[in-house]
Image 1 (cartoon, rainbow, N blue to C red):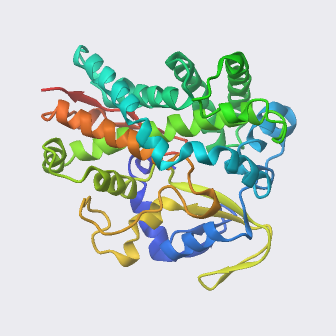
Image 2 (cartoon, rainbow, N blue to C red; image 1 turned 135 degrees about the vertical axis):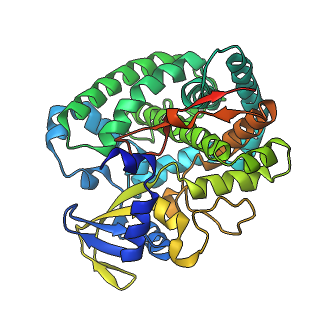
Amino acid sequence: MGVSFWEDPYPVYKRFQERSAIFWDEALDVWVVTGRNAVDTVLRSPAMSSDWRRLNIDESASQEFPELERMLHGWFMLMDPPAHTLLRRTMQSWFSRSRAESLAEDFQSVVSAHLDRVRTLPTVDLAKDFASPVASGLLARVLDVPVEVTVEAAEHVAAIASFLAQPHKREFAAKAADAVDRLNTLYRRLAPSLSRNSALFPLVNDSALPPDAYLHTAHLLSFAGQETTAGLIGTGLLHLLRRPNLYKEVAAGQADLAAVVEELVRFDTPVPQVPRVALSDVTVDGHTIRAGDRVLVLLAAANRDWQNSEDADVLDFARDQKNIAFGVGIHYCLGAPIARKGALIAIRDWTTTFPETLLSPETVQWSVGTGYRGLESALVQLV
């Protein structure tokens, strides 16, 4: 896909949805699911697998880079029950809404420190100087580790993100495998000093869990906590800056911040798509998906929901529509309360601290060739 797709994929998603809520794409050899109800059906269906061993049809990387393959087998978001159920249940109590609220003061401290830092910079990059380091800082509080750990991990998970988006490319597999080795070293070194306040602590020395559950889940939290949170903060602020009236409304405290975050993730979904494989025949919106068929679920298309909304492309904080940016069903994003709270604080405090921020539109660059939606760079002027 060309650069224009990465800058704005929504015209393509809209054409997909106008074609059908679900259709078979011969070129990709996959069912593409775009409609809101069809997406909900697929994600809730027990006939749809998330197992990496089924999703990954290119076994060359598995054979050449076995540790990379083992790591991805160990991500509970890439598992089916009962293995998925066991790991998710172990982590579930930590990622509650009450836990997110209890971390609010810590998150506030992280955001404030980075706001103080960007004040001193001659040029400010919304992504590199704020969204990404804030995400690392928030993740450090969740894991209760020094921020240097999550900053180092962030350097490595980018390679894994590129591989997951394009697993057929050997060079991406090689870089991801190297990243896994480095992450293994990082988190093995960290394990003996983990505190009980760490989201990873329940995984250490639990004999009921699979071998290396601690390591693999540490990689997963580093990946999900860094890439998607940075994407939510960066793209959210960018879309507000592109609409000065809305930006001023948020900066002046005239908007419901929870509604602002929900509308931002609907408008530009941090994880635009998720894959599935059918375990058995299943009917979705009148189409029969056969056992073994691959399925591409476009959360971003479902969130715009053009077929049922005349103003889907408008950013509207008063919109009465629940988004499915964090998924539905058994794979609903465990970290959603943490991501929402972190983004709310970051967006609130940035806008109130810099109410006259000016965006340099020509500097906006989007991440290319990844499975998530994120800003690569966007320069702003702090007035």
